[in-house]
Amino acid sequence: MNQLIGNLEKMITSCPSNGGLVEYSLTMNGEAKLPLNSLLGKKISWSYQGQINCIHCGARTKKAVGQGSCWPCFNNLACNDLCIMKPETCHYANGTCRQPKWADEHCMTDQALYLARSSGVKIGITRGGNHLTRWADQGASEALVLGLFPSRLDVGKAEKAISSSGISDRTGWQKMLKHDVADTAFEPIIEQVHEILTDEQKQFLLETPQTIQLEYPHLQWPTKVKSVKLDKVPIYTATLIAIKGQYLIFDTNEVFNIRAHSGYNIAFSWED
Image 1: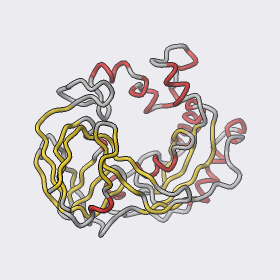
Image 2: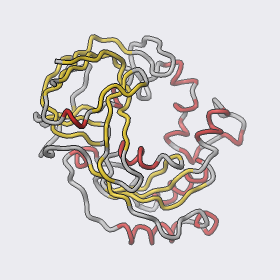
Image 3: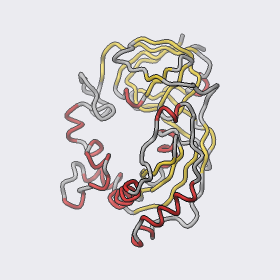
């Protein structure tokens, strides 16, 4: 068995700009370490010894919060502020942003409003140019950019108006991992979006959104899924049958959320 040791971070993904197969790489300590698509059908193992390091400052921490942060970084970094989860509450204009320079690069630039089909159809937002990564992280099979807004606050207000009108902003992770995907058409939802948004907001919508389809590496899809967590299952071996979203999927019908274990130090082993 081959082995890598390091602190997990979310898998790096890539795919062609016009869609296609998503390529995954195991990421440790901020670097892509191992292409994963080629490991389908092979046994992989991990061993976790109880060490967690903050993905931002590297400090050892008893518990990771906010997907890999220690408490000081969770409380002080802009990427962990409440407005990241609720962008309509952005307070940059009030002069109270935790890290204005970070916000200039991440929040005060073009922001995409999108529709994605992962389990059902959902509305979502992401930084302009980041849509393919975002869709792959969510396990979307099909998606399109509805519009580009000038700031995270602007797109957040649009998303809030749309989700408050009954269009979901959530992904059903179990259905997504079973590849149980609803066939709801995008067109009626796009029409709803146009009815919901104000004239000022509609100026940022694209005239002809282009649908992109994503495929995920798999030998088969599970019929049911059970999540495995390192704190409860520190040592594990199984055969990899699929990768989707930020999950590894095994022949045991068990799944492992890599991103949820950011900062965990493990020994990761795999067959040739």
